[in-house]
Amino acid sequence: MQWGMGRPRKTEEMYMNRLHLSLMIPAIVLTAISAPPLIAEMNIDGMIKYRQNVMKSLAGHVGAVDRLVRGQVPLMDQLEMHATAARDITRTITTLFPAESIPPEVEFSGATVATEALASIAEKPDEFDKAAQATIDATEELAKVVQAGNKQELPLAFKRVGESCKGCHKDFREKKE
Ligand code: HEC
Image (cartoon, rainbow, N blue to C red; front, top):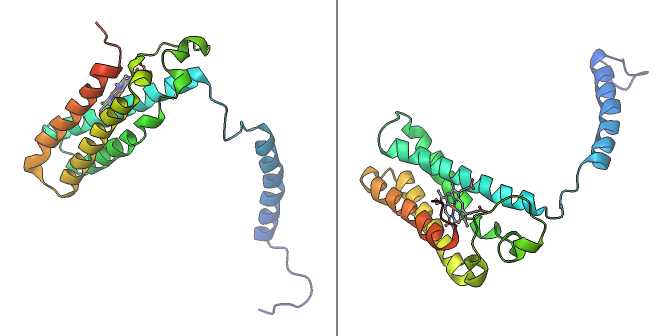
């Protein structure tokens, strides 16, 4: 084949590339104009729902670990995934409770969805952080035990995770009767 001679051949591939480009540029411009800003202003209802979603996802992973640790499911190769996901999620807990989204401020911030977060979070921030750290430590330990393949220590490590969740809920989450 000879390169640099005459006009390049318009192969089908080149045509498709141009077509893609001409379609893509307006698409990118349109997305940039219409997409919501990446750094959105906080929507209080959204924030409350978000943390409830995150908490539910945490409970989902911990519940999956429970089934596996009890030997009810022959999918032990998925244990590490759930344990590390739970650990990664717990590392975000302290970011989920901005003042405007918890009592007392939430009363005045226009929230229309219910939250079970208690005023004690704002009153005792150090204890709240400590409670979050206890869950971070417990899930880190669980992930380590799993990664080490240490089956004997699994049930105890799992139990400690559950206790740490309760430790925070007891003081900082409204009790449901
Ligand atoms: C540092 C405190 C803290 C820790 C640690 C914590 N939670 Fe929570 N959790 C809360 C608070 C506060 C709420 C109420 C949030 C709301 O309603 O706005 C909550 C809510 C929940 C909910 C209900 C979500 C919904 O749909 O309303 C679930 C489920 C949950 N947590 C599971 C867990 C599990 C499982 C763990 C441990 C692995 C855990 N939490 C650890 C503070 C904590």
